Length: 380
Image 1 (tube, helix red, strand yellow):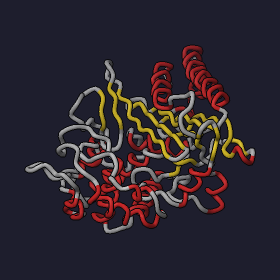
Image 2 (cartoon, one colour):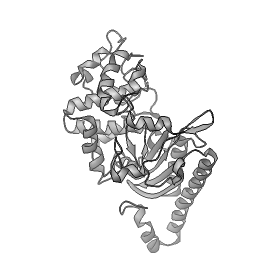
Image 3 (cartoon, helix red, strand yellow):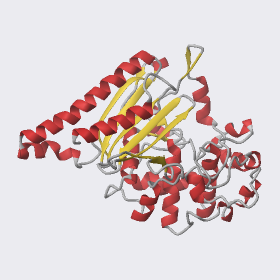
Image 4 (cartoon, helix red, strand yellow):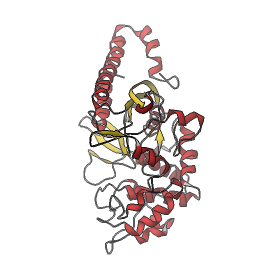
């Protein structure tokens, strides 16, 4: 299936004009898709929990999609290629793209101290004497030196309307583990703080900003922070966890209504088609160029100090292999949902996987990256 005509959409026409050589290339990428799809189908059947939906995208267009298992096992609703799922930490990529939109609009600079717009950040615990101020770049690259989570169990609960309050009350319960800029250190609360700081910088609510600056410009009509209405609600896949061998949807269902501060770092619901358009934006597809060339390049540049071959950019993991192939990706796991997206920076071929349960036979990250690599080798 395709959202609009694109490079993959004209394969069959070119095939008629150029003969058997391209026919072999077309069969090759389709055979690759069939191979990976068969593995997913078998894994979902073995897991026997919920379902998986997968999409292959080219230039931001969904060119193939498949779904297996249950969107709602209790009511015998099968997973669909248009099903809506929670994306977990893929939300961090969305927040980072929003940040770069605001940079392009002149509302902030990556190296501005976050305290410029969110002075409450000075309440963080155990700051090292003489250390640099935490900047937007630090938070978006997980180099802010912050602990992964605040030392406060209540930060994870409460209705979505209270997320900003949860952030502000979490800050004085969050400690530094290292100096800003010193090393890569994954921090969920860091991205929560980032989202609130972006809202302050723009003078608009964070969720409104994401809708207006990311979802609407990219045509991500199946994406939201709260799934309501006749268009999205029937498509929402129920989430499941397995506890002591028993499959339950109770905990994931509760988190739809209340997730504490986990909004900028884990609150986005989306579809494989929408995330495909997002991957098109970060890989520079004309027509989905919501960022300046400079801002997009900065987003996909490795910002972490440990390695030049693999690391974290701004809201994206980045791997550069021996032949210079660059793959940008991000995963997510939250309350009965797991997700992964990956895209080849040069060919702009990507894969999106959404699963409405936790761990299973498929390692989503390794699977998605291998699929992208094999699609590149197939000539897609």
